[in-house]
Length: 337
Ligand SMILES: [Mn+2]
Image (cartoon, rainbow, N blue to C red):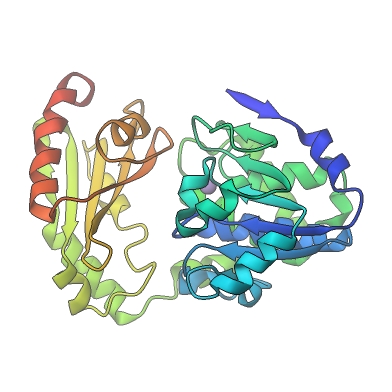
């Protein structure tokens, strides 16, 4: 399903006003790239903008233009609330239900102004007044590119190009996931022409590890287990594992993909214990038709895309693992060769 109020949204932006752009909880490259990229464009149109992230985001995104101006709701609550009160328009980007914004959701639900959503996840809520929702898109950053270029292609500066390229690169696993289309590559090419420093972006995101990051990856790979008759592989990381390698936000990003890289494996999961929050964070990945969005919605309070999805469990790590092993058997028809 897709909905497109693009020209209406362009109209709403004709008169300069105050605009807040909100990223989802635990912001990733696409969330930060799209809010910053669209925010810079809106500034060029004369708007006053503020990006708000519910909580902190990984170090590998902090070098992006204007990243240091982002308000973190968790730490700068009063200032964030004031911005939301004063704003006439709020954009929610890269998520499609206010609940995904964690501690900002109440403020989003109570927001008095115009609510606009641009997103590529499945099953959007009816939260927004205006939306562009397209699940065939690689990333929200790709959608922002199409949105800006439909009206002002000349306004895509190198700063905007860097933000959008980063989000597309991270959401497509460096252009390898099935969601990547020839259009995605054309957009990436256009962004490079507009000044995106693609090698630099790649280095800043992927070649910026601390020694502890690689050692944590080592531990994760040692913990990896395979359920070969279900072509499934999964990783567990306990709080103890995280503590042993000085865990910082973003350190476990992408680890689940190693499980999916195994031959004959089409379903991969990682379960990460976060004792302070009292939850097990879950990432799910698949190859082909196995739908991890449906799997996560059914069993782990999450969702996302067919081949990449998130979720959580409030049980212990061990109980969550046992539960997973139990329910995955019900998918034998879809998973076995
Ligand atoms: Mn995304």
